[in-house]
Length: 308
Image (tube, rainbow, N blue to C red; front, top):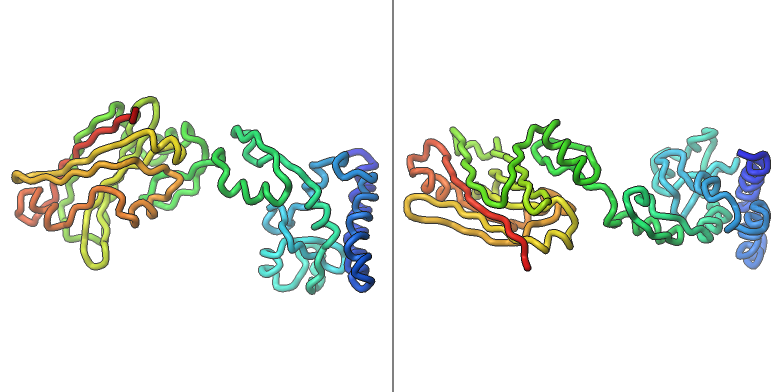
């Protein structure tokens, strides 16, 4: 970092520490002076300053995220976000001094002047946003990483689709199948153990994309059921380009389901709880299995197609 940049950062912190003093002066001074002082420290032009240095100033030292108003500071000028202020029990995480309720108005003004690229720029997002809009955009950016779709265990892995496919195959040992039609068999020796839920995941490579077939046991109210549903490994808009059907039967009866696969942007639990799939009551599942009430033997057939 150039010597001038170091001096500039020190001057900004001095300006920030001075902001609380100015709160005791006239309201007109309060509206003007913090921004003017910050701009002077940055050479009179915020847009020509080092964006990365300013971003560093806006980084909360506790959670490491960019700070949104209200931004707080201790009497020594050390800043942190409002969320973390409530977590540190009124003790500055930098100098351990008492925090109080001092707003860092100068830094809030500096933040308002910034325009920054989305943090998912490296993943393809081309947009640049004003600082506050950027933070809201990133929560729903279509280029943000996807979460692991394996719901049988808590998994914190995120990434793009190729990374997640390899992760499912290598780490979760998920079955991978090529083709757009399937005929699966699910067996459970004790179908009464609804609390020990049957849970299975199969990934299909179809039309050059990946689809996840979920099958599990859970309860709707007090009623034990089995459910099969499909999720698409991609965005909501892409998912709407496809449809799928599921069929289960036996003893001369069958149930069918047709729908649009849900994007993996929707969590496994959200799709399951919305009952957006083929639902089979346990008694009916046992009837399909042969009716002896001793073992679950279900055959689930299905296919995936692309809408024209």
